[in-house]
Length: 464
Image (spheres, rainbow, N blue to C red):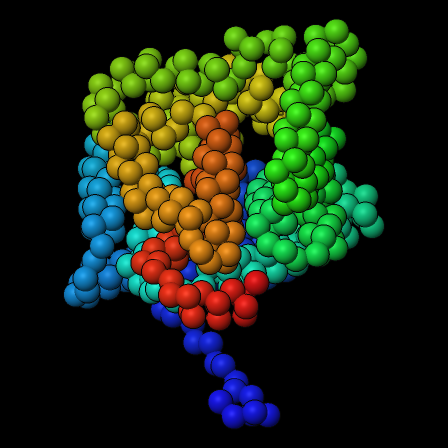
C-alpha cells in the first residue's frame, strides 16, 4: 500500500452472523409484541405483532435446520454429535406429545408451543454452528444485543423516572417486565465482562451500568438494593483485578472479609434480614418454599405417569406456562396440573403475583424433569454443551480479545439463565428468546477458531 493512500475495508457478514443477528433482533421484536401469560399493566407496544407471525419464525428455523442437514460440508464431530442427540430429543418429545394428548394430559397446541419454546434455542445454535466460519465476529453480535438493551433501557427509564412506575410496569419496549429485566441483567454481565477483559475507559461502562442496573432492579425488585450493591462490587472487582497481582490479593481479601461480616450481621441483626426482603421468608420457611416443594414433588408426579421416567408426561402437561393457562382462564385443567400445580397458580393469581414461588405449595419449577423426562433433558444438556458452551469455554484461551469477551459472557450468561430457570422456568430459558437467542448464537459463533497473528491483530484493532 503506497503512502497517503488509504484502503477501505468492507466487512461482509457471514451467513452465520446474518442468521444469528436476525434472530437476536427478532427475539426483541417478538417479546414486545407477544401476549404474556397474564395481563401486564400499562403495556407499551412499540411494534405490536399478530401472534400468527410466530409461525414465520418456526417455518424459517425449520427450513434452516433442514438446509444445514442436507448441505454437504465437513462437519466437526461436536456438531454431528450435538445435532444428533438434539434430533433424537425432538423425536422423543414428539412421541411423548402423542401419548400425552391421547391420555388427556395435554392438548396438541399446548404440546407444540411448549416443545418449541424449549428446543428452538438449541436448534438455532445448531444452525449457526453449522454455518460458522473462522473469521466470524461474535463481538459484532454482542454490540447488536447491547444496542437493543440500550433502546429498552431508555424506554424503561422513562417509565421508571418520569411515570414513577415500579415492578411489572417497568418493562422497557418489551411486553413483560421479567423479560426486560432478564435482558438488562445480561447487559450488566456483558458490561462487567468488557470492563474486565478490555482496556477501554471506565466512562462507557459506568454509563451502561447506570442505564441497565436501576431499571432491571425496578422490574425485578425483590432484594433490589442487594442486587445493585453486587453489581457495584463486581465493577470494583473487575477494576482491581486488572491492576495487577497485589491488587487481586487485596480484592479477594476484601471480599472475603466483607462476606464474613455480612454473614455475621445476618445472624445477629434481625432488622437487617427484614431489609433484605424475601431472604427473611427463605430463612424462616426453607422447607415450605415452592422451590423446595416443587422438586420434592418430582418423584410423585413422575410415578403418577410411569412412562414419564423415560419420555416425560409430554410438554404442556405439568407446570409450564401453557400447561396452567387453562387454569388461569377458568377452564378445566389437565389431571397433572390439577393435582400438582393448579392450586399454586390459583393462589398466585389471587394474590396478583405478590407471593410468588417463595410461598406456593407447588410450582412450575420441575417442568423439564416432568414434562420432558430425564432422557430429553440429558439430550438437551449434551446438545447445549457441544453446540454452545464448549466453544465458549475454549474461547477463554483464545489470543483474540473479542473471542475471550464473547466466551466469558456466554458462560456467565448461561449460568445465570439456567440458574434462573431452576427457580422460575417461565421467565428464563423457555419463554424469553430475547435473552436466550443472543447467548446460544454467540456461543455457536465461537467454533472453528484458528487465529493467525495477522488476522488476530486486524480483528482486535477493528472490533473492540
